[in-house]
Each structure stands twice: as structure tokens, then as C-alpha cells.
Length: 180
Image 1 (cartoon, rainbow, N blue to C red):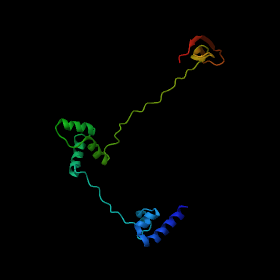
Image 2 (cartoon, one colour):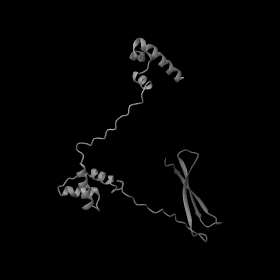
Image 3 (cartoon, rainbow, N blue to C red):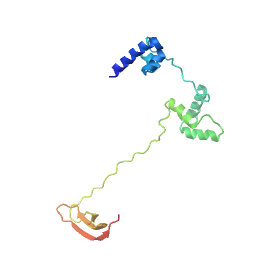
Image 4 (cartoon, one colour):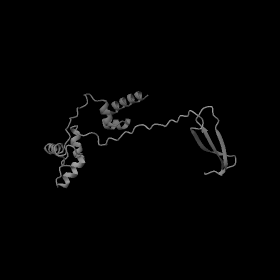
């Protein structure tokens, strides 16, 4: 459908262009003039020249960057750039900002990601209780059972032994108001 409409618009523009001019013909057909020229271009699209990015006026020169890297690698080889930054400030020397120091070292692969390595904890072991005789291992639970009346529940105390084929005991408590 759109191809038919576009073909009709192109034909209308060609007919009207002889009478009204290209700009007025495009306006009458409802097509932007730049769109018409782009679709009916006779030559290939022009190649845009690649312009190198200009450095910021306050950016460090290559010699200053090399000096910062040399200071960080010689005096502060075992320290972080943050430590080096504040140590140099204490001495009254300002070479570059802390983030620029990180950036210079990162460009040369001398510093990892900014996030510190975090300790990995071993997985917690779940204690396993073993019973080879009755009454050695007991488990208990308290459960609130709602009654038919609103806002009232009954506490069920359940105690069970882990030893198989052994009876467990259950007792019920009194009625308590529902904590909700």
C-alpha cells in the first residue's frame, strides 16, 4: 500500500514540478523536499570526512601524562592512585585529579576495575542431626490455627523425634487473640 502511495506522490511531484517548481510540488504532495532529493539522488551519498576529536583545552599534554604515570609507577607502585593523590597534595604537589590518575593507568592496563574485590564466603553447611535411638533428637514447632470466629486463633505445639518408627507428641494450647 505504501509503495503505491509513494509512487503516486513521486508522479505528482514530477508533473507539478514543471508547473510550480520542485519546492511547491513537494509541499503540495505532502513530501518534505529533503526526502524527495534523498530518494531521487543521482549520485552516491557523499562521504563525510572523519575529523579527529579535538582535545579539551585543559587536558594534560602527552608529556604531562607520561610524567604522572612515571610518578605513579616509581614512587607509588604499591599504592592506589587515591593514596598517591592525597600524599602528593600533602607535599603541596598537584599533578592531576584522582580520576585522571586512574584513567592514565587504565589506558596502559596497569589498574583493574575501580570496584574492589570482595571476599567470597564459603557456603554454610546445614547441620545434619543423626539419631540412632529414640529421644535423642527432637524438633518442635508452634503453629497458629485460625478458628471460625474472627480474630481468634489457637496455638498448636508440635514436638517430634527424628528417630523413625517412633510416635511423636502433639498438644494444643489455649485460645489467643489473633495478632493481626
